[in-house]
Image (tube, rainbow, N blue to C red; front, side, top):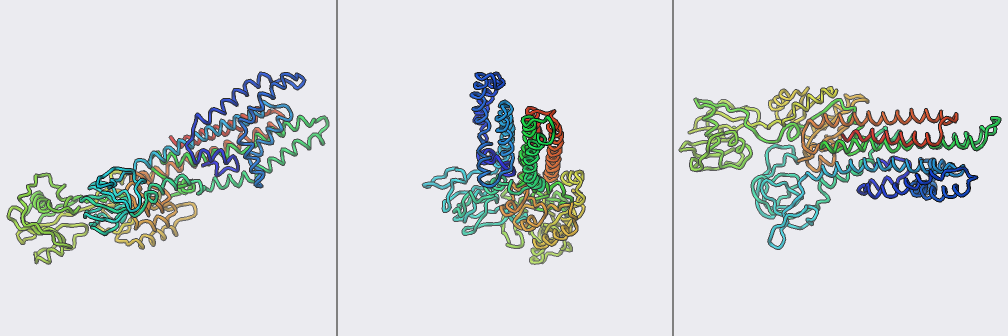
Length: 638
Protein backbone atom coordinates (compact mmCIF):
# COMPACT_ATOMS: atom_id res chain seq x y z
CA UNK A 1 0.00 0.00 0.00
CA UNK A 2 2.91 2.28 0.51
CA UNK A 3 3.30 2.87 -3.19
CA UNK A 4 0.14 4.94 -3.26
CA UNK A 5 1.71 7.34 -0.84
CA UNK A 6 5.03 7.72 -2.53
CA UNK A 7 5.73 10.08 -5.33
CA UNK A 8 7.06 7.37 -7.56
CA UNK A 9 7.96 3.74 -8.09
CA UNK A 10 4.25 3.09 -8.26
CA UNK A 11 4.32 0.16 -10.58
CA UNK A 12 6.67 -1.76 -8.35
CA UNK A 13 4.74 -1.01 -5.22
CA UNK A 14 1.44 -1.82 -6.80
CA UNK A 15 2.74 -5.24 -7.69
CA UNK A 16 2.90 -5.83 -3.97
CA UNK A 17 -0.47 -4.30 -3.43
CA UNK A 18 -2.68 -6.14 -5.84
CA UNK A 19 -0.96 -9.53 -5.88
CA UNK A 20 0.66 -11.86 -3.41
CA UNK A 21 4.34 -11.06 -2.80
CA UNK A 22 6.49 -13.75 -4.47
CA UNK A 23 9.94 -13.71 -2.81
CA UNK A 24 11.44 -16.19 -5.29
CA UNK A 25 10.24 -14.18 -8.30
CA UNK A 26 11.68 -10.97 -6.85
CA UNK A 27 15.01 -12.58 -5.90
CA UNK A 28 15.88 -13.95 -9.38
CA UNK A 29 16.62 -10.62 -11.17
CA UNK A 30 18.12 -9.18 -8.00
CA UNK A 31 20.51 -12.13 -7.68
CA UNK A 32 21.55 -11.85 -11.35
CA UNK A 33 22.24 -8.13 -10.95
CA UNK A 34 24.21 -8.77 -7.74
CA UNK A 35 26.43 -11.41 -9.41
CA UNK A 36 27.10 -9.08 -12.38
CA UNK A 37 27.84 -6.25 -9.93
CA UNK A 38 30.45 -8.34 -8.08
CA UNK A 39 32.05 -9.43 -11.38
CA UNK A 40 32.09 -5.79 -12.51
CA UNK A 41 34.06 -4.77 -9.40
CA UNK A 42 36.90 -7.05 -10.59
CA UNK A 43 37.16 -5.13 -13.88
CA UNK A 44 36.83 -1.69 -12.25
CA UNK A 45 39.86 0.14 -13.69
CA UNK A 46 40.73 3.66 -14.97
CA UNK A 47 39.60 4.49 -18.48
CA UNK A 48 43.16 4.27 -19.95
CA UNK A 49 43.05 0.50 -19.36
CA UNK A 50 40.74 0.11 -22.33
CA UNK A 51 40.16 -3.70 -22.40
CA UNK A 52 39.30 -3.87 -18.66
CA UNK A 53 37.20 -0.71 -18.92
CA UNK A 54 35.23 -2.20 -21.81
CA UNK A 55 34.76 -5.44 -19.83
CA UNK A 56 33.54 -3.36 -16.88
CA UNK A 57 30.92 -1.63 -19.04
CA UNK A 58 29.86 -4.94 -20.61
CA UNK A 59 29.19 -6.44 -17.18
CA UNK A 60 27.95 -3.44 -15.18
CA UNK A 61 25.60 -1.84 -17.72
CA UNK A 62 23.38 -4.99 -17.80
CA UNK A 63 23.55 -5.09 -13.98
CA UNK A 64 22.47 -1.43 -13.93
CA UNK A 65 19.56 -2.02 -16.32
CA UNK A 66 18.35 -5.18 -14.51
CA UNK A 67 18.42 -3.59 -11.05
CA UNK A 68 17.27 -0.14 -12.15
CA UNK A 69 14.78 -0.86 -14.92
CA UNK A 70 11.72 -0.20 -12.76
CA UNK A 71 13.16 3.09 -11.48
CA UNK A 72 14.20 4.23 -14.97
CA UNK A 73 10.85 3.40 -16.59
CA UNK A 74 8.93 4.96 -13.68
CA UNK A 75 10.96 8.15 -14.02
CA UNK A 76 10.28 8.21 -17.75
CA UNK A 77 6.53 7.70 -17.33
CA UNK A 78 6.32 10.32 -14.60
CA UNK A 79 8.18 12.86 -16.74
CA UNK A 80 5.69 12.26 -19.59
CA UNK A 81 2.86 12.82 -17.08
CA UNK A 82 4.40 16.06 -15.85
CA UNK A 83 5.54 14.59 -12.50
CA UNK A 84 9.25 15.25 -12.87
CA UNK A 85 10.57 15.67 -9.36
CA UNK A 86 10.36 12.42 -7.45
CA UNK A 87 12.77 9.84 -6.02
CA UNK A 88 12.90 8.01 -9.38
CA UNK A 89 14.09 11.20 -11.06
CA UNK A 90 16.74 11.80 -8.36
CA UNK A 91 18.14 8.29 -8.66
CA UNK A 92 18.04 8.33 -12.46
CA UNK A 93 19.94 11.63 -12.71
CA UNK A 94 22.42 10.62 -10.00
CA UNK A 95 23.19 7.21 -11.53
CA UNK A 96 23.39 8.42 -15.13
CA UNK A 97 25.75 11.17 -13.93
CA UNK A 98 27.85 8.56 -12.13
CA UNK A 99 28.07 6.50 -15.33
CA UNK A 100 29.08 9.64 -17.25
CA UNK A 101 32.07 10.23 -14.92
CA UNK A 102 32.99 6.51 -14.96
CA UNK A 103 31.64 5.63 -11.50
CA UNK A 104 29.74 2.56 -12.72
CA UNK A 105 29.95 0.48 -9.52
CA UNK A 106 28.40 3.33 -7.54
CA UNK A 107 25.63 3.73 -10.12
CA UNK A 108 24.77 0.03 -9.96
CA UNK A 109 25.00 0.04 -6.16
CA UNK A 110 22.41 2.84 -5.91
CA UNK A 111 19.90 0.84 -7.95
CA UNK A 112 20.80 -2.51 -6.42
CA UNK A 113 20.45 -1.44 -2.82
CA UNK A 114 17.26 0.42 -3.59
CA UNK A 115 15.82 -2.85 -4.93
CA UNK A 116 16.93 -4.63 -1.75
CA UNK A 117 14.97 -2.01 0.19
CA UNK A 118 11.97 -2.67 -2.05
CA UNK A 119 12.35 -6.40 -1.38
CA UNK A 120 12.15 -5.82 2.36
CA UNK A 121 9.15 -3.58 1.84
CA UNK A 122 7.34 -6.15 -0.32
CA UNK A 123 8.00 -8.89 2.21
CA UNK A 124 6.71 -6.75 5.08
CA UNK A 125 3.59 -5.68 3.18
CA UNK A 126 2.91 -9.27 2.12
CA UNK A 127 3.17 -10.48 5.70
CA UNK A 128 0.73 -7.78 6.84
CA UNK A 129 -1.72 -8.73 4.10
CA UNK A 130 -1.53 -12.41 5.03
CA UNK A 131 -2.33 -11.45 8.62
CA UNK A 132 -5.46 -9.65 7.46
CA UNK A 133 -6.61 -12.43 5.15
CA UNK A 134 -6.01 -15.20 7.68
CA UNK A 135 -8.07 -13.23 10.18
CA UNK A 136 -11.02 -12.97 7.83
CA UNK A 137 -10.88 -16.69 7.07
CA UNK A 138 -11.96 -17.56 10.62
CA UNK A 139 -15.43 -16.21 9.95
CA UNK A 140 -18.19 -18.77 8.98
CA UNK A 141 -17.74 -19.65 5.34
CA UNK A 142 -20.12 -22.48 4.42
CA UNK A 143 -23.67 -22.84 3.19
CA UNK A 144 -25.87 -25.93 2.77
CA UNK A 145 -26.95 -25.62 -0.87
CA UNK A 146 -29.95 -27.62 -2.13
CA UNK A 147 -29.04 -29.28 -5.46
CA UNK A 148 -31.26 -31.84 -7.22
CA UNK A 149 -33.06 -32.72 -4.02
CA UNK A 150 -29.83 -33.24 -2.07
CA UNK A 151 -27.76 -30.97 0.14
CA UNK A 152 -24.18 -30.02 -0.66
CA UNK A 153 -21.92 -27.95 1.61
CA UNK A 154 -20.37 -25.17 -0.48
CA UNK A 155 -18.59 -21.88 -0.01
CA UNK A 156 -21.09 -18.99 0.25
CA UNK A 157 -19.51 -17.23 -2.76
CA UNK A 158 -20.69 -20.13 -4.96
CA UNK A 159 -24.31 -19.55 -4.03
CA UNK A 160 -26.29 -17.49 -6.54
CA UNK A 161 -29.30 -15.25 -5.97
CA UNK A 162 -32.40 -17.46 -6.16
CA UNK A 163 -30.63 -20.60 -4.92
CA UNK A 164 -32.09 -22.49 -1.97
CA UNK A 165 -30.07 -23.17 1.19
CA UNK A 166 -30.78 -25.05 4.41
CA UNK A 167 -29.82 -23.45 7.73
CA UNK A 168 -29.67 -25.98 10.56
CA UNK A 169 -30.05 -25.17 14.26
CA UNK A 170 -26.88 -23.69 15.73
CA UNK A 171 -25.56 -22.49 12.37
CA UNK A 172 -24.84 -18.92 11.37
CA UNK A 173 -26.99 -17.52 8.57
CA UNK A 174 -24.42 -17.33 5.71
CA UNK A 175 -26.38 -15.14 3.26
CA UNK A 176 -29.38 -12.85 3.24
CA UNK A 177 -32.56 -14.58 2.14
CA UNK A 178 -36.31 -15.22 2.38
CA UNK A 179 -37.65 -18.16 4.41
CA UNK A 180 -39.46 -20.64 2.14
CA UNK A 181 -40.38 -23.10 4.89
CA UNK A 182 -39.78 -23.67 8.58
CA UNK A 183 -39.89 -21.49 11.67
CA UNK A 184 -37.25 -20.82 14.26
CA UNK A 185 -35.83 -18.38 16.74
CA UNK A 186 -32.88 -16.29 15.57
CA UNK A 187 -30.32 -14.72 17.83
CA UNK A 188 -30.36 -11.25 16.25
CA UNK A 189 -28.53 -9.44 19.05
CA UNK A 190 -25.72 -8.67 16.60
CA UNK A 191 -28.16 -7.05 14.20
CA UNK A 192 -30.60 -5.25 16.49
CA UNK A 193 -28.77 -4.83 19.78
CA UNK A 194 -31.61 -6.70 21.53
CA UNK A 195 -30.99 -9.79 23.66
CA UNK A 196 -34.36 -11.44 23.06
CA UNK A 197 -34.28 -13.75 20.00
CA UNK A 198 -36.73 -13.07 17.19
CA UNK A 199 -39.21 -15.70 16.04
CA UNK A 200 -39.15 -16.02 12.25
CA UNK A 201 -41.57 -17.81 9.96
CA UNK A 202 -42.20 -18.55 6.30
CA UNK A 203 -42.10 -15.45 4.09
CA UNK A 204 -39.83 -13.38 6.37
CA UNK A 205 -36.42 -11.98 5.36
CA UNK A 206 -33.40 -12.99 7.46
CA UNK A 207 -29.95 -11.39 7.38
CA UNK A 208 -26.50 -12.91 7.28
CA UNK A 209 -24.89 -12.86 10.69
CA UNK A 210 -27.86 -14.03 12.74
CA UNK A 211 -27.63 -17.37 14.58
CA UNK A 212 -30.34 -19.96 13.93
CA UNK A 213 -31.23 -21.36 17.35
CA UNK A 214 -34.10 -23.86 17.18
CA UNK A 215 -35.72 -25.04 13.95
CA UNK A 216 -34.36 -25.87 10.52
CA UNK A 217 -34.98 -23.21 7.84
CA UNK A 218 -35.22 -23.48 4.06
CA UNK A 219 -34.18 -20.12 2.61
CA UNK A 220 -34.12 -18.58 -0.88
CA UNK A 221 -30.98 -16.42 -1.24
CA UNK A 222 -31.63 -12.75 -2.06
CA UNK A 223 -28.06 -11.34 -2.01
CA UNK A 224 -24.70 -12.56 -3.28
CA UNK A 225 -21.89 -13.40 -0.88
CA UNK A 226 -19.85 -10.57 -2.42
CA UNK A 227 -22.30 -8.15 -0.83
CA UNK A 228 -21.70 -9.64 2.64
CA UNK A 229 -19.79 -8.03 5.45
CA UNK A 230 -16.80 -10.37 4.94
CA UNK A 231 -16.16 -9.26 1.37
CA UNK A 232 -16.79 -5.62 2.22
CA UNK A 233 -14.38 -5.65 5.17
CA UNK A 234 -11.60 -7.21 3.08
CA UNK A 235 -12.14 -4.60 0.37
CA UNK A 236 -12.08 -1.79 2.92
CA UNK A 237 -8.85 -3.00 4.52
CA UNK A 238 -7.14 -3.65 1.20
CA UNK A 239 -7.94 -0.05 0.24
CA UNK A 240 -7.12 1.40 3.63
CA UNK A 241 -4.34 3.52 2.11
CA UNK A 242 -6.95 5.84 0.58
CA UNK A 243 -7.55 7.15 4.11
CA UNK A 244 -4.14 8.69 4.81
CA UNK A 245 -3.02 9.76 8.25
CA UNK A 246 -2.04 13.42 8.76
CA UNK A 247 1.61 12.35 9.10
CA UNK A 248 1.49 10.65 5.68
CA UNK A 249 -0.13 13.69 4.10
CA UNK A 250 2.62 15.86 5.58
CA UNK A 251 5.37 13.63 4.14
CA UNK A 252 3.67 13.55 0.74
CA UNK A 253 3.55 17.36 0.67
CA UNK A 254 7.10 17.56 2.04
CA UNK A 255 8.48 15.29 -0.72
CA UNK A 256 6.66 17.36 -3.35
CA UNK A 257 8.63 20.49 -2.40
CA UNK A 258 11.76 18.82 -1.02
CA UNK A 259 12.73 16.99 -4.23
CA UNK A 260 12.93 20.01 -6.61
CA UNK A 261 14.84 21.95 -3.96
CA UNK A 262 17.40 19.12 -3.78
CA UNK A 263 17.69 18.97 -7.59
CA UNK A 264 18.36 22.71 -7.94
CA UNK A 265 20.72 22.69 -4.94
CA UNK A 266 22.70 19.84 -6.52
CA UNK A 267 22.77 21.74 -9.81
CA UNK A 268 24.18 24.76 -7.99
CA UNK A 269 26.84 22.57 -6.30
CA UNK A 270 27.86 21.20 -9.72
CA UNK A 271 28.02 24.57 -11.54
CA UNK A 272 28.88 27.39 -9.11
CA UNK A 273 32.05 26.24 -7.26
CA UNK A 274 34.10 25.64 -10.48
CA UNK A 275 33.15 29.20 -11.56
CA UNK A 276 33.74 30.87 -8.19
CA UNK A 277 36.48 28.86 -6.44
CA UNK A 278 40.01 28.97 -7.93
CA UNK A 279 41.37 25.50 -8.65
CA UNK A 280 37.99 23.78 -8.33
CA UNK A 281 37.36 21.22 -11.09
CA UNK A 282 34.04 20.45 -12.70
CA UNK A 283 34.55 16.68 -12.23
CA UNK A 284 35.14 17.12 -8.48
CA UNK A 285 31.99 19.21 -7.91
CA UNK A 286 29.80 17.23 -10.30
CA UNK A 287 30.71 14.16 -8.23
CA UNK A 288 29.77 15.98 -5.02
CA UNK A 289 26.48 17.04 -6.61
CA UNK A 290 25.74 13.41 -7.49
CA UNK A 291 26.53 12.41 -3.89
CA UNK A 292 24.11 15.08 -2.72
CA UNK A 293 21.39 13.76 -5.05
CA UNK A 294 21.76 10.19 -3.82
CA UNK A 295 21.88 11.15 -0.13
CA UNK A 296 18.89 13.45 -0.48
CA UNK A 297 16.66 10.81 -2.09
CA UNK A 298 13.52 10.60 0.14
CA UNK A 299 13.08 6.85 -0.45
CA UNK A 300 13.45 5.97 3.20
CA UNK A 301 10.65 8.34 4.14
CA UNK A 302 8.20 7.63 1.34
CA UNK A 303 8.63 3.87 1.78
CA UNK A 304 8.91 3.45 5.54
CA UNK A 305 6.19 5.81 6.74
CA UNK A 306 3.28 4.26 4.81
CA UNK A 307 4.85 0.86 5.58
CA UNK A 308 4.84 1.79 9.28
CA UNK A 309 1.11 2.45 9.13
CA UNK A 310 0.49 -0.63 7.04
CA UNK A 311 2.48 -2.61 9.57
CA UNK A 312 0.22 -1.14 12.24
CA UNK A 313 -2.85 -2.28 10.30
CA UNK A 314 -1.35 -5.76 9.80
CA UNK A 315 -0.18 -6.01 13.41
CA UNK A 316 -3.64 -5.09 14.63
CA UNK A 317 -5.17 -7.64 12.24
CA UNK A 318 -3.00 -10.40 13.75
CA UNK A 319 -4.58 -9.53 17.09
CA UNK A 320 -8.14 -9.62 15.78
CA UNK A 321 -8.54 -5.88 15.16
CA UNK A 322 -9.32 -4.58 11.66
CA UNK A 323 -8.34 -0.93 11.19
CA UNK A 324 -9.67 0.49 7.92
CA UNK A 325 -6.95 3.08 7.33
CA UNK A 326 -3.93 4.81 8.81
CA UNK A 327 -5.96 7.92 9.57
CA UNK A 328 -7.88 5.89 12.17
CA UNK A 329 -4.63 4.65 13.72
CA UNK A 330 -3.63 8.28 14.21
CA UNK A 331 -7.07 9.14 15.60
CA UNK A 332 -6.87 6.27 18.12
CA UNK A 333 -3.73 7.78 19.65
CA UNK A 334 -5.78 10.79 20.82
CA UNK A 335 -8.82 8.91 22.22
CA UNK A 336 -9.67 10.20 25.71
CA UNK A 337 -13.37 9.29 25.92
CA UNK A 338 -14.56 5.73 25.19
CA UNK A 339 -18.31 5.08 24.95
CA UNK A 340 -19.76 1.56 24.89
CA UNK A 341 -23.10 0.13 23.88
CA UNK A 342 -24.20 -2.52 26.42
CA UNK A 343 -25.92 -5.51 24.82
CA UNK A 344 -23.53 -7.57 22.71
CA UNK A 345 -20.66 -5.18 23.42
CA UNK A 346 -20.05 -5.30 27.17
CA UNK A 347 -22.45 -8.21 27.67
CA UNK A 348 -22.82 -11.54 25.91
CA UNK A 349 -26.42 -10.93 24.88
CA UNK A 350 -27.15 -14.19 26.72
CA UNK A 351 -29.74 -14.46 29.52
CA UNK A 352 -28.63 -15.71 32.94
CA UNK A 353 -30.51 -16.15 36.23
CA UNK A 354 -29.14 -13.56 38.66
CA UNK A 355 -31.72 -13.63 41.47
CA UNK A 356 -34.27 -16.09 42.88
CA UNK A 357 -36.71 -14.30 45.25
CA UNK A 358 -39.16 -16.74 46.96
CA UNK A 359 -42.34 -15.57 48.79
CA UNK A 360 -45.00 -17.15 51.01
CA UNK A 361 -42.92 -19.93 52.50
CA UNK A 362 -41.14 -21.25 49.41
CA UNK A 363 -37.35 -21.68 49.47
CA UNK A 364 -34.99 -20.60 46.66
CA UNK A 365 -34.17 -24.18 45.54
CA UNK A 366 -37.85 -25.12 45.64
CA UNK A 367 -38.94 -22.09 43.60
CA UNK A 368 -36.16 -22.61 41.01
CA UNK A 369 -36.99 -26.32 40.73
CA UNK A 370 -40.72 -25.74 40.05
CA UNK A 371 -39.93 -22.90 37.61
CA UNK A 372 -37.37 -25.00 35.68
CA UNK A 373 -39.74 -27.98 35.36
CA UNK A 374 -42.58 -25.69 34.26
CA UNK A 375 -40.42 -23.88 31.68
CA UNK A 376 -38.79 -27.07 30.34
CA UNK A 377 -41.36 -27.27 27.53
CA UNK A 378 -40.55 -23.76 26.23
CA UNK A 379 -37.91 -22.77 23.65
CA UNK A 380 -37.85 -19.13 24.76
CA UNK A 381 -34.34 -18.01 25.82
CA UNK A 382 -35.67 -16.75 29.17
CA UNK A 383 -37.15 -20.19 29.86
CA UNK A 384 -33.92 -21.90 28.78
CA UNK A 385 -31.87 -19.72 31.13
CA UNK A 386 -34.04 -20.87 34.06
CA UNK A 387 -33.66 -24.53 33.02
CA UNK A 388 -29.87 -24.08 32.73
CA UNK A 389 -29.71 -22.53 36.21
CA UNK A 390 -31.37 -25.63 37.71
CA UNK A 391 -28.99 -28.50 38.50
CA UNK A 392 -31.56 -31.22 39.11
CA UNK A 393 -33.11 -33.74 36.76
CA UNK A 394 -36.28 -32.85 34.86
CA UNK A 395 -38.80 -35.61 34.15
CA UNK A 396 -41.04 -34.72 31.22
CA UNK A 397 -44.01 -36.66 32.63
CA UNK A 398 -44.04 -34.25 35.61
CA UNK A 399 -45.34 -31.53 33.25
CA UNK A 400 -48.94 -31.74 32.03
CA UNK A 401 -51.52 -29.38 30.53
CA UNK A 402 -48.77 -27.10 29.19
CA UNK A 403 -50.02 -23.93 27.47
CA UNK A 404 -48.21 -20.83 26.22
CA UNK A 405 -50.08 -17.54 26.74
CA UNK A 406 -48.73 -15.04 24.14
CA UNK A 407 -47.46 -11.81 25.68
CA UNK A 408 -47.93 -13.15 29.21
CA UNK A 409 -46.16 -16.44 29.94
CA UNK A 410 -47.19 -20.05 30.45
CA UNK A 411 -49.76 -22.11 32.31
CA UNK A 412 -49.06 -25.72 33.27
CA UNK A 413 -49.26 -28.38 35.93
CA UNK A 414 -46.13 -29.61 37.71
CA UNK A 415 -46.69 -32.79 39.70
CA UNK A 416 -50.40 -31.90 39.91
CA UNK A 417 -49.59 -28.33 41.13
CA UNK A 418 -51.13 -25.55 39.04
CA UNK A 419 -48.31 -23.22 37.95
CA UNK A 420 -48.34 -19.86 36.20
CA UNK A 421 -44.97 -18.39 35.10
CA UNK A 422 -44.69 -15.10 33.28
CA UNK A 423 -44.81 -11.33 33.57
CA UNK A 424 -46.79 -9.04 35.86
CA UNK A 425 -49.64 -8.88 33.33
CA UNK A 426 -50.12 -12.63 33.73
CA UNK A 427 -50.59 -12.26 37.50
CA UNK A 428 -53.18 -9.53 37.02
CA UNK A 429 -54.96 -11.55 34.35
CA UNK A 430 -55.21 -14.57 36.65
CA UNK A 431 -56.05 -12.29 39.63
CA UNK A 432 -53.12 -13.52 41.70
CA UNK A 433 -52.61 -11.30 44.74
CA UNK A 434 -49.06 -9.92 44.91
CA UNK A 435 -47.25 -6.80 46.08
CA UNK A 436 -44.18 -7.09 43.83
CA UNK A 437 -45.13 -5.36 40.60
CA UNK A 438 -42.25 -3.02 39.82
CA UNK A 439 -39.26 -5.33 39.56
CA UNK A 440 -36.86 -3.66 37.12
CA UNK A 441 -35.23 -5.98 34.65
CA UNK A 442 -36.30 -9.15 32.88
CA UNK A 443 -38.40 -10.99 35.48
CA UNK A 444 -40.46 -14.20 35.61
CA UNK A 445 -43.17 -14.21 38.33
CA UNK A 446 -44.49 -17.54 39.61
CA UNK A 447 -47.86 -18.44 41.07
CA UNK A 448 -48.43 -21.96 42.48
CA UNK A 449 -51.99 -23.15 43.12
CA UNK A 450 -53.25 -19.55 42.71
CA UNK A 451 -50.81 -18.27 45.35
CA UNK A 452 -47.90 -15.90 44.60
CA UNK A 453 -44.64 -17.88 45.07
CA UNK A 454 -41.99 -15.27 44.11
CA UNK A 455 -39.97 -14.21 41.08
CA UNK A 456 -36.78 -15.01 39.20
CA UNK A 457 -34.67 -12.15 37.81
CA UNK A 458 -32.91 -12.72 34.52
CA UNK A 459 -29.93 -10.59 33.47
CA UNK A 460 -27.62 -10.40 30.52
CA UNK A 461 -24.27 -12.02 31.23
CA UNK A 462 -21.24 -9.72 31.31
CA UNK A 463 -18.38 -10.57 28.97
CA UNK A 464 -15.46 -12.11 30.82
CA UNK A 465 -13.04 -9.32 29.92
CA UNK A 466 -15.45 -6.37 30.34
CA UNK A 467 -14.01 -5.22 33.69
CA UNK A 468 -10.46 -5.83 32.47
CA UNK A 469 -11.23 -3.74 29.36
CA UNK A 470 -12.21 -0.72 31.46
CA UNK A 471 -9.15 -1.09 33.70
CA UNK A 472 -6.84 -1.28 30.66
CA UNK A 473 -8.41 1.80 29.11
CA UNK A 474 -7.82 3.82 32.27
CA UNK A 475 -4.25 2.57 32.39
CA UNK A 476 -3.84 3.69 28.75
CA UNK A 477 -4.80 7.25 29.73
CA UNK A 478 -8.49 7.28 28.73
CA UNK A 479 -10.08 9.88 31.03
CA UNK A 480 -13.74 8.84 30.75
CA UNK A 481 -15.51 5.53 30.10
CA UNK A 482 -19.25 5.66 29.38
CA UNK A 483 -22.08 3.20 28.62
CA UNK A 484 -25.16 4.05 26.56
CA UNK A 485 -28.02 1.53 26.70
CA UNK A 486 -31.70 1.12 26.02
CA UNK A 487 -31.99 -1.04 29.15
CA UNK A 488 -33.49 0.26 32.39
CA UNK A 489 -31.67 2.22 35.11
CA UNK A 490 -31.32 -0.71 37.54
CA UNK A 491 -29.68 -3.01 34.98
CA UNK A 492 -27.45 -0.21 33.64
CA UNK A 493 -26.26 0.81 37.10
CA UNK A 494 -25.55 -2.81 38.00
CA UNK A 495 -23.36 -3.27 34.89
CA UNK A 496 -21.58 0.08 35.41
CA UNK A 497 -20.78 -0.72 39.05
CA UNK A 498 -19.53 -4.23 38.29
CA UNK A 499 -17.03 -3.26 35.58
CA UNK A 500 -15.99 0.17 36.87
CA UNK A 501 -17.47 2.54 34.28
CA UNK A 502 -17.25 6.26 35.07
CA UNK A 503 -20.84 6.95 34.01
CA UNK A 504 -23.80 5.58 32.06
CA UNK A 505 -27.03 6.68 30.37
CA UNK A 506 -29.98 4.27 30.34
CA UNK A 507 -33.38 3.84 28.66
CA UNK A 508 -32.13 5.43 25.44
CA UNK A 509 -33.61 5.09 21.97
CA UNK A 510 -31.18 4.98 19.01
CA UNK A 511 -31.71 8.70 18.38
CA UNK A 512 -31.02 9.41 22.05
CA UNK A 513 -27.64 7.71 21.68
CA UNK A 514 -26.76 10.04 18.82
CA UNK A 515 -27.73 13.05 20.94
CA UNK A 516 -25.61 11.73 23.80
CA UNK A 517 -22.50 11.28 21.67
CA UNK A 518 -23.00 14.73 20.14
CA UNK A 519 -22.82 16.11 23.66
CA UNK A 520 -19.53 14.34 24.36
CA UNK A 521 -18.10 15.51 21.03
CA UNK A 522 -18.94 19.12 21.90
CA UNK A 523 -17.23 18.73 25.27
CA UNK A 524 -13.99 17.33 23.82
CA UNK A 525 -11.15 19.61 22.69
CA UNK A 526 -9.14 19.47 19.45
CA UNK A 527 -6.51 17.14 20.87
CA UNK A 528 -8.88 14.54 22.32
CA UNK A 529 -11.06 12.09 20.42
CA UNK A 530 -14.28 10.25 21.26
CA UNK A 531 -14.58 6.55 20.40
CA UNK A 532 -17.85 4.59 20.34
CA UNK A 533 -18.06 0.77 20.38
CA UNK A 534 -21.28 -0.99 19.31
CA UNK A 535 -22.51 -4.02 17.43
CA UNK A 536 -26.07 -3.66 16.13
CA UNK A 537 -27.87 -1.90 13.29
CA UNK A 538 -29.23 0.55 15.85
CA UNK A 539 -25.62 1.49 16.71
CA UNK A 540 -24.60 2.37 13.13
CA UNK A 541 -25.60 6.09 13.34
CA UNK A 542 -23.63 6.53 16.57
CA UNK A 543 -20.62 4.64 15.19
CA UNK A 544 -20.66 6.93 12.15
CA UNK A 545 -20.84 10.08 14.29
CA UNK A 546 -17.95 9.26 16.66
CA UNK A 547 -14.39 10.41 15.96
CA UNK A 548 -13.48 6.71 15.95
CA UNK A 549 -16.33 4.25 15.41
CA UNK A 550 -15.67 0.65 16.45
CA UNK A 551 -17.85 -2.41 15.79
CA UNK A 552 -17.90 -5.91 17.22
CA UNK A 553 -17.28 -8.01 14.11
CA UNK A 554 -17.74 -11.67 15.05
CA UNK A 555 -21.52 -11.34 15.24
CA UNK A 556 -21.87 -7.65 14.46
CA UNK A 557 -24.36 -6.40 11.91
CA UNK A 558 -23.33 -5.52 8.36
CA UNK A 559 -24.43 -1.92 8.92
CA UNK A 560 -22.29 -1.53 12.04
CA UNK A 561 -19.25 -3.21 10.45
CA UNK A 562 -19.45 -1.15 7.25
CA UNK A 563 -19.88 2.10 9.15
CA UNK A 564 -17.11 1.43 11.67
CA UNK A 565 -13.54 2.66 11.33
CA UNK A 566 -12.27 -0.25 13.43
CA UNK A 567 -13.74 -3.77 13.63
CA UNK A 568 -13.03 -6.08 16.58
CA UNK A 569 -13.30 -9.57 15.13
CA UNK A 570 -13.62 -11.61 18.35
CA UNK A 571 -16.05 -9.23 20.10
CA UNK A 572 -13.73 -8.79 23.12
CA UNK A 573 -14.06 -5.28 24.66
CA UNK A 574 -10.47 -5.50 25.96
CA UNK A 575 -9.37 -5.21 22.31
CA UNK A 576 -10.33 -1.51 22.43
CA UNK A 577 -7.40 -0.74 24.73
CA UNK A 578 -5.17 -3.01 22.65
CA UNK A 579 -6.12 -1.08 19.50
CA UNK A 580 -5.16 2.18 21.22
CA UNK A 581 -1.83 0.66 22.33
CA UNK A 582 -1.05 -0.54 18.78
CA UNK A 583 -1.95 2.87 17.34
CA UNK A 584 0.34 4.67 19.77
CA UNK A 585 3.20 2.26 19.11
CA UNK A 586 2.72 2.73 15.36
CA UNK A 587 2.71 6.52 15.75
CA UNK A 588 5.92 6.36 17.78
CA UNK A 589 7.68 4.15 15.23
CA UNK A 590 6.61 6.39 12.33
CA UNK A 591 8.09 9.46 14.04
CA UNK A 592 11.25 7.52 14.94
CA UNK A 593 11.66 6.84 11.21
CA UNK A 594 11.12 10.47 10.28
CA UNK A 595 13.67 11.74 12.83
CA UNK A 596 16.19 9.01 11.91
CA UNK A 597 15.94 9.74 8.18
CA UNK A 598 16.18 13.51 8.58
CA UNK A 599 19.14 13.32 10.99
CA UNK A 600 21.21 10.89 8.91
CA UNK A 601 20.48 12.68 5.64
CA UNK A 602 21.33 16.06 7.16
CA UNK A 603 24.67 14.76 8.43
CA UNK A 604 25.66 13.13 5.11
CA UNK A 605 24.56 16.13 3.06
CA UNK A 606 27.10 18.20 5.02
CA UNK A 607 29.78 15.52 4.61
CA UNK A 608 29.04 15.23 0.88
CA UNK A 609 29.12 19.00 0.33
CA UNK A 610 32.63 19.28 1.80
CA UNK A 611 33.88 16.22 -0.08
CA UNK A 612 34.21 13.77 2.82
CA UNK A 613 31.37 11.42 1.78
CA UNK A 614 31.63 9.55 -1.52
CA UNK A 615 28.89 7.92 -3.58
CA UNK A 616 29.48 4.71 -1.62
CA UNK A 617 28.72 6.44 1.67
CA UNK A 618 25.76 8.12 -0.03
CA UNK A 619 24.41 4.74 -1.17
CA UNK A 620 24.75 3.19 2.26
CA UNK A 621 23.36 6.28 3.96
CA UNK A 622 20.27 6.35 1.75
CA UNK A 623 19.64 2.61 1.51
CA UNK A 624 20.75 2.01 5.10
CA UNK A 625 18.24 4.55 6.40
CA UNK A 626 15.53 2.99 4.24
CA UNK A 627 16.32 -0.54 5.50
CA UNK A 628 16.52 0.56 9.15
CA UNK A 629 13.21 2.39 8.78
CA UNK A 630 11.59 -0.65 7.14
CA UNK A 631 12.89 -2.99 9.84
CA UNK A 632 11.72 -0.55 12.51
CA UNK A 633 8.29 -0.32 10.88
CA UNK A 634 8.08 -4.12 10.81
CA UNK A 635 8.27 -4.15 14.62
CA UNK A 636 4.60 -3.15 14.72
CA UNK A 637 3.71 -6.63 13.49
CA UNK A 638 5.24 -8.29 16.56
